[in-house]
Length: 290
Length: 319
Image (cartoon, rainbow over all chains, first blue to last red; front, side, top):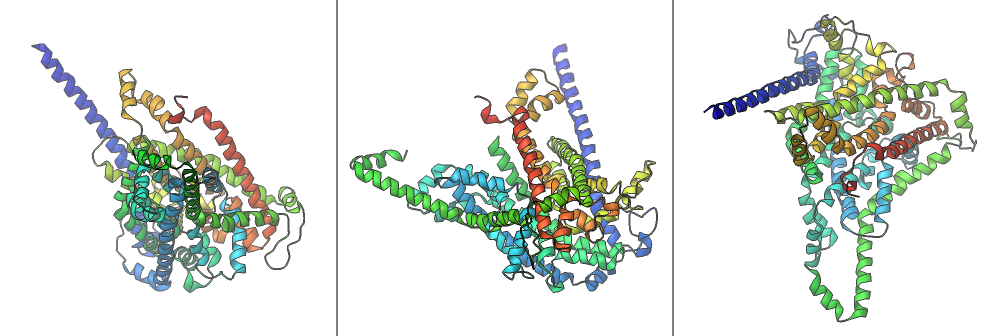
């Protein structure tokens, strides 16, 4: 008779232990979340305060008076809308170029056999090690000699020639697509171009989404490129515009934070829309590795 | 499965087989080159060409407009003997790399382990922890300039614990820790990488360890850690390479890229930038870029050479 009782006790103690560890882990996670999210809250709250309230010490966590007009003033004191359109144009061009070209190149490196393929792929990998600044100055010289200064060409055109990291990422992913699929399509008379377009692209959407998101982020946040190649204010991107704005309003933190939040907002929104897709892609990648 | 019919067809005519096969192969190769052609063209014009130009240019007094005379090793000699800011920038960069790389690698790994636990609401936590990593650029730098201002949020929180916070970006001793602090906030990118690889560790290994009576720490030390060393190695190499190239943060967070109080934020790339695009001493700047290249190359080779001692690759286990 005592046997089943013991068993019940054993199970309930295991359950209690598990519950305790869940609570400990959860509390760590919640504290961490607060720490990580607080700066973003701080940005919002500062952007809505009056300058007087910002100067107070200790600082207030909630604005006493909410000044939505800070955003109006921010948008009035610098042409952020124009900057946003410029940035959007560059970013969309770069994302399309990156997704199409890198998957095209990665297909060549993973699904077609040709002589010297592995050696060339080693070169792709080794280019990742070259510090950007080594090629930056000659590229600047080159682009300025062909008259591309103060145009968006230096920011967009290089994306047409692939990016080592994206080629690597997509190639790894393409390798997990069975070769039998390609062979079968070839026997049916499909060309490599057709297989890439109609078979590979639909099959590798999660990886392409990863490339799209990474390159969106890269182009949207690019500071160095526009700083170097764009001189006219009407051509500024958001990053340059924001840095310029900092010099303009110096320490008026409510305007600076309003501007910063406006620049970061599209990234935050896109993150929440595509995030599930993105994590899914990472999980699939990890799953195929394991 | 598809081979037999082809084989029999070819069998009927030996000569045709050889011819057809080689022409097929040639066609295949040609298509292969076609697919990688965009990269190849970019490689020549955007990478190899500039690399050669930069290498030659580093031995000249190039200034983009008037002259490009060969001056031998003068740029390199000037750098090592007659430019104090070169040494300052090298020191600042080394300081930053040596402190920030281990801290961010460990933090990313620990967070990944935490986010790999089975508790309710994990999806939301992963989103929150990853969010700061996707935020970058000038907006983030301005935010941290506000957070780290002497009477800002960070010092207010420190004050609750009775700690008198430093002046961060205004104190030469604290500018680099301030930047590392900021970097730590956005550690979610490599965290996600570790998380993906943690989820790839086969469950059977943990079950086997449990049967052997391993506790949680032993399982982490002897199962998890060896299994994720390839990602650890990748993260270490890439964040070292990235760390040496820190530029934007310092450019934006110090007044007009002047390198901050007492040149404490004058990193290697910032000094190089000022030489190239402020005073147009481009030959010298290109020489500097090659020194950085050599440093990164040597460190990467050391990393790769040391890897077999601690990196565990699944494929090599049985050999």
